[in-house]
Image (cartoon, rainbow, N blue to C red; front, side, top):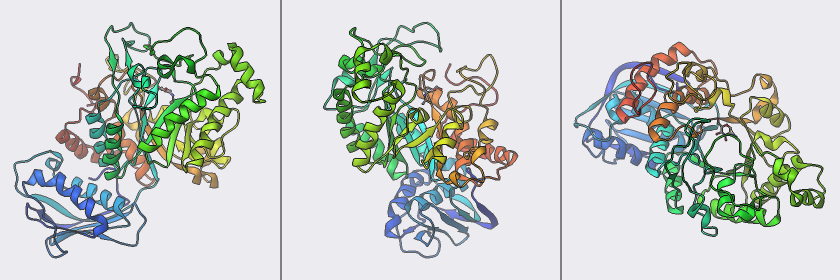
Amino acid sequence: MIVPKPVHCQARPGHFVLGGRTALAADPALGDVAAWLRSEIGPVIGGDLPPAAPGPGTITFALDDLPREAYRLTVAQDGVRIAAGGPAGAFYAAQSLRQLMPPAAYRKAGPGGELEIPAVHIEDEPRFGWRGCLLDVARHFMPKHDVLRFVDLMAMHKLNVLHLHLTDDQGWRVEIRRHPRLTEVGAWRAQSQTGWNGPLDGRPHGGYYTQDDLREIVAYAARRHITVVPEIDLPGHTQAAIAAYPELGNLDTPLGVRTGWGVGVNVLNAEDSTVKFFQDVFDEVLELFPSPYVCVGGDECPKDQWRDSPAAQRRIRELGLRDEEELQSWFIHQFDAYLTARGRRLVGWDEILEGGLAPGAVVASWRGDLGAVAAARNGHDVISTPSTSVYFDYRQGPGEDEPVPFGTVLSLEDVYAFEPIPAELRGDPAAERVLGSQCAVWTELIDSPRQVDYMAFPRLTAFAETVWSTADRDAADFLRRLEAHLDRLDAIGVEYRRESGPLPWQ
Ligand code: TNX
C-alpha cells in the first residue's frame, strides 16, 4: 500500500509490534534519520524509542553497498532492518516504514500504545534524481510554517527538490540586506485581481521571508533530503523589483507592485548597473541557499519596452547584438558566467533557448516537450515540467463549480499518465539528459494554504509515482493504493480534493 510504489515489495507472514520501548539502532552516519523517526513516531505511541545497539526487537539502520538514494527494508516479527546506500536512502526507508504503520502514525500525538507493522521485504530506489515541486510564493505569499508543512508533505512522497519561486511582478519575498526596498516596497501590494480577469479585491496582500526564515526552511528541508532551489526571475517578471527601484526599469514614470495577472510588459533594462544590482542580490541568495542549482527564470520576457527604449537599442548596438532576443540571451549569459564562477549551475525556463543557450544552463521545459528535446539534443540537462501535465494551478475537472477555474482540465488520472521522458527522446541517448521532473503550484488564483492543499493533493501523490516508480505503471493499482494513502493525508489534516462533497475552504 506504499505510495510512490516501491520497485519491489513482497508481503511476508506475521508482523512487528512497535512499542514505546522499541529501540532504534543506527550506524552513526544514519543517526539523524533515526532521530527524525524517533521525533515523529515517539509522540504517537507515547514512548521515546531509545537508541541502542542492534539486537532482537530493534529497528536497525545500516549502511550497505547501494546507490545513495536506494534502500532495502525488511520487517519481521523479531525486528526491522533497514539497509541504505546513504542517509537519503535510509530516510526513504523510514518514510516507507511509516506508511506500513496505521494512518495514526501521521498524527502529531496519539493515545499511546503499540503499532502493528506487517512483515514485508522491500527493495527500492528512485527512477529519477530530480523529483521536484515548484511553489510560487510570489503571487500569493505562503507563511513560513505552511512552507515547512509543505516540505514534510513532499518528503512523505519522496520528492527531493523544492523550487521556490521567490520573486515576480506581484511580489518580492526574499529579504536582501543590500537592497532593503525590495521587501519594504516590493513585498506588498494594495490589492489584487480576483480571477484571471476579475475585479480588484480591494484588500492588501503581502509578506516576505527574512534571511533567518530562509535559512530555517533550507535546513528543515535538508534534514528531509530536499534541496531548496531558489528562483529570482529575470529579466521579465520583475515589476515588484522595479516598483522598489525604478532605475532597474525602462520607464520614466514610477510603477507600483503589480495587481493583475498574465504576462507583464515591465521588464529590466540591460544596463551594467542592473546586472550588477541582481548579482548583489544573488551574492546574498547564494549564501542562503547551498543548492548546486539556482534558477534565474528567463521566461515570458516581452520585448516591447526594449524595442521602444532608445537606451535598450543603444545597448544592443554597444554589445554587438542583432536584436532583442539576443539581448535576453546576453542577460542570461551574464548570470550563467556569474553562477558558474561560483560553482553553481544555472536553471532557466525554456525561453532561454531563444537567442542562444548559455553554456552551463539547465533547461526547465514547461511549454510542452519542444524545449526539453532541443536542449537535451544540444547536450544540456533538462527538467521536464510541461504545463499541461504537471501544473497544479490547472483545473481538476470540467465542472462549473471548480473553485480555481484556470487552464485546461488536468485530472488526477492525467497526472498519473505523465511520462517525464518526452516521447521524441525515447530510445535516444539524449534522454539521459532528462534529470527528472517537477510539478508546479503557481498561485495567481490560489490565495491560501488551504487552497494549495486542494490543488496539490492528491495530484502530487500521482506525480510522485511518475518520478519515483518504474515506468510500467498501473493506474488501477495506483487508485487502490491511493485509498489507503488518503487516510494518511486525512490524519495529517491535508484538505485534498475529494471526488465529491463540499469544498473545505469556501
Ligand atoms: C506560466 S511556467 C508561467 C508562470 C505562470 C504560469 C501559470 C512559467 C515559466 N511561467 O508565470 O504562473 O504560467 O500557469
